[in-house]
Image 1: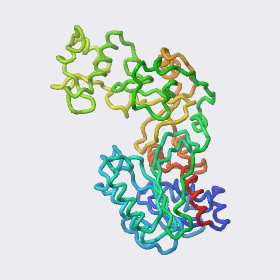
Image 2: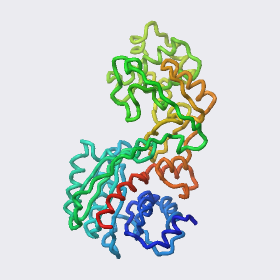
Image 3: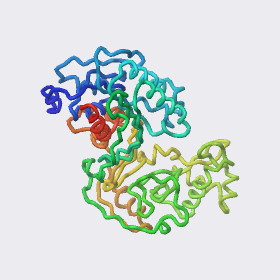
Image 4: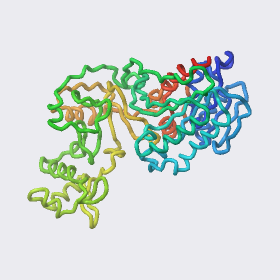
Length: 443
């Protein structure tokens, strides 16, 4: 039995809470760490219920109900101090087709507001994807905020990143905090400031090199010439080499590796592939974000191009031909990567990309890699890390640590299900930092 759960049975609770859209319990871990007692949780997904009950209910010496479907919830049979919940985020994400409140899952916001209004907790903490705050969704977001405010609460909201709270994960999420209007000074709540912590992946991922690397600085002009790509992430510095390598035939970049980099190809074949890559997204070839290019068009783009040259690239499984359309890359999906590898991070990286429920295959180099020559960077990575297979996929336990879940937490036995559940979870240290400041208003 986990000692944390034993302690919870002995110590009287400092406050009570209800765990809505509980998933596998990220909110709960954070709040129990501050002495909270959960009076009930709401979850309908069977695998999540199984994991939640195994970790929190199985050993608890009390009768704690699953409150069931949010759409059926009304007045609780108890008074509660705090309500928390990660309302389903898919309606506000690209993967969820951006339907917002028109999506049945998006309408769960209305049920959340209704439950808060009826039960009038002292406060609430709600979490969702950053996309909820985007301009395209802003009217709906403002409507949600207005409804929560009208339910008798002072509101504050802010986008927080997990990397600011001790986790090496670049994960933006919007948090909404409400404090009931009769709570003294509740209108003065402020979100926590970033912690001065800079862990690296090797602090969280087992089986990789623990060697730190002092990164060399470059002039941005040396790395990018006169055009720095506009879509670089928070941890892609313009004066340093990236800490990851993207495997994709449909994108390009400082550390993007293509299939023609990984197998024997001539300079001419590389030239053909590079020209197809640079032109495949042009709208003259179709409306999609990448389209097959007809032979006639390719012959205008590439001097003296012979159809036999394209056939050779087809034999190497780099290109394929779509009848009546043209030629495109076999590896045409970014999420699929190349040969089952989408990204490989270096162990000394400051942050991994946002972990998602789709469970993209993300790998970490197991061997230290410290090449500081920007011209040889990709090729040496291929020689030292990729070809010798000095890399490993992150495990469910790695994923749990990257979300701030403690090692005592028992994960689902199926790795794919475990990663999906963790990708949907809330980062525990972020909630813990918010709750620490929020609880000061009535404890």
